[in-house]
Length: 308
Image (cartoon, rainbow, N blue to C red; front, side, top):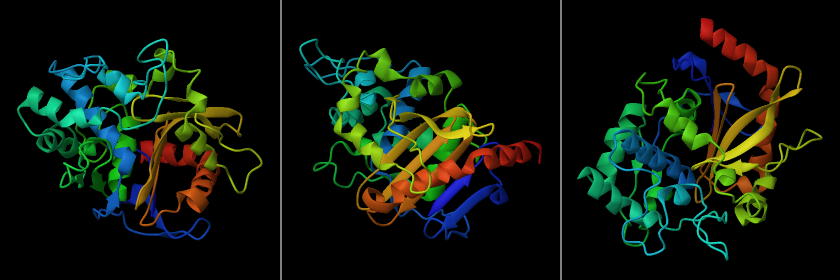
């Protein structure tokens, strides 16, 4: 299932939802079935919860993790810079699930609510998501806040659109995060943490090269850096006759079911989900093709959406 939307309006006719293979897409109703495992895209929602609690002065992403002897901060966890080398903690980019198992106890100690109740109250309900986190195997997978959300393709679109608009859900019209928190989430944390030198060598970073177009001579290329929970990409889409690269953000969830979410500074979100593990072979290039093909057509669509 594919979905494309402009966050300026959330009426049903202004969402473009498709099913089928690339080049043979059929328009369908927005998919609200909770049958998609978000995997690593789940961490976006958890980071949004921390930023919302920071806005309420209940905790800070710069706080050190209680009970952890390595003096790692939540910002380092969320930016994947909690790795260590001879220069100390926070200087190495390493994409993993380290320290995410500390999330539930931190949220419960801060809010006197379970992680599930807290993220539902502060993030999921205000955004209008239909999905929830699966914590049934919490003993075997205590890091479920990083990969345990199960939702719909529409949920994917809502997450991207909410961040693209600076924190307001286009579905509920509620502010989920302050714009300053969204900016903090999207900015280049790799550079901020002086981890840029180690970034290109990370195995997950190298795997992003699979997003190479089948149809075009140039590839969208490798992601250039990382924010908090999101890959930063530049030039995956262009505007004004293909001359000006657009800054965007990407998240990929790989598992038994797979998901991709992309949104950019021009204000649109593109999501794709599959019930099977396809991304390593065929869906990633197709996703790159769709981003390329939107181009100037999207600018026209957004202008219509703003005024309609």
